[in-house]
Image (cartoon, rainbow over all chains, first blue to last red; front, side, top):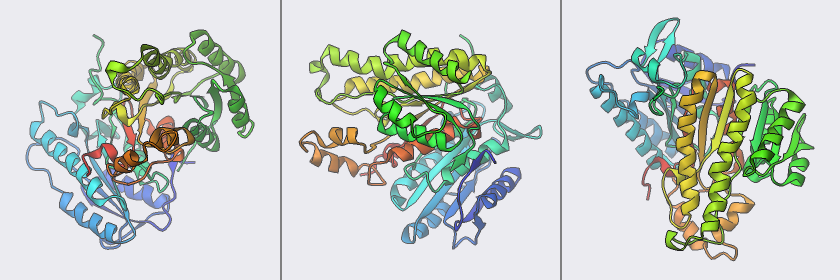
Length: 193
Length: 258
């Protein structure tokens, strides 16, 4: 058995935003759990992948696309929107102030969408901390490692698991929430003092 | 959702109650061996009789010796303890008053169960959990620990305490292999909360209808919806999630939705 199994039979998904290993892993996991990829019109599960490595410059704003998908879902049979953003949304980093601000903007946008699209559309987010994929940095900043509760980077599979949890058709009372997958980096001061 | 708990032993407090029993059933359905820990032994026994390999133990979580005995009964039966769900809790029904009138004995009753009891159970359960190489703890807090409400000051303070204690535990215990997270249930309809929502004689019905307008999903939740989140956070699938608070509240804490 896989770590987590959900029943997405009959669900059609679309992933927008970033390319890369996380997108591939997510698509694979959603199909393994019965989901089918769809064109943008027919989707009842839309996942928005934001850039997860802090960089200077503007971050693509995926909120307008999400709002359009959500409004279509709300006018139809409902659905889910899931944003995959950085954990820096809830704890801005001194070394990445502009990126942190843009992530916080995305987070606030998610919360707004959850209220305006309820009750037919559930809207949530995953906040990703330090994640490596086969030794390569995929998300976050390696400086985060010394301050997290868990003394290791996260994995792609652990991010995927959180998205699956929020996609779970039996998870029906969670909306407007940010679930950080960050080993506890956003929690507090992860040093002995 | 299915998560393979693979025979892990889960100690669930308040497990004879509505949310606790939903969590216990969910864990058992996913391969967990569940300890039904409750002050109501008869209720615990009745539930345990319906679940495979479950154990009922009587425990008043305010009593450190009783808590340690319950944990010893767990390790005596299974030889391990992998998951702790701190679910037991109470609110005030009879004393819906402002702080200047709040009776000290009621303050003591609520906080000694909701916060002190969680500490006592966690402390005891961590001994076998750490000896076994790690585990997962799920604390059941409340949305009132995030957004305060009137007339429940002891409950509000205790639940806010649980949320921050969760974070402290996560930072302390994460490096030793124990991940600690919390769930903040919103308005969950059970036989017990029906009285809280509507009053013994329906006195609060109007107030409750108004309150539901603040919940984007427009309805109370169910114990099963809390159990779904508890299963995920207690499972290996949530491996890198630590110190987090997940509100399962129909969107009530997402913002101001009126």
